[in-house]
Image 1 (cartoon, one colour):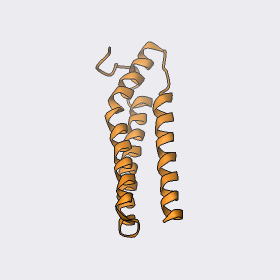
Image 2 (image 1 turned 180 degrees about the vertical axis):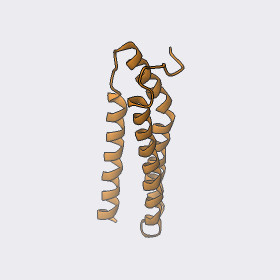
Image 3 (image 1 turned 30 degrees about the horizontal axis):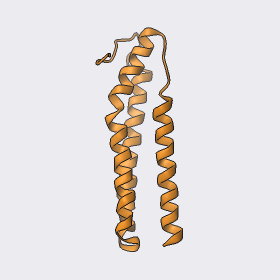
Length: 109
């Protein structure tokens, strides 16, 4: 198992930009979690479930960033880059579930 990012011929290009993109996504999920707290006075403590879920997704994105960076840099160095389909699909599913749950809160309560 490779534990360090590989040196590749074009530093600052794709893996580093992708890392920054995942960081922005994580930060945005933290902001969304904070905005969900504004609903607490109107919808009660149940909104805290959405708040915790959004923070958990943000933490998951942040904790798996290093693995994605290592995989991307070694993929470029080995000339066999494999996209992070699981990470993208998992994040898409989590964001869709958060959105549906938020809609349910707005429409039902």
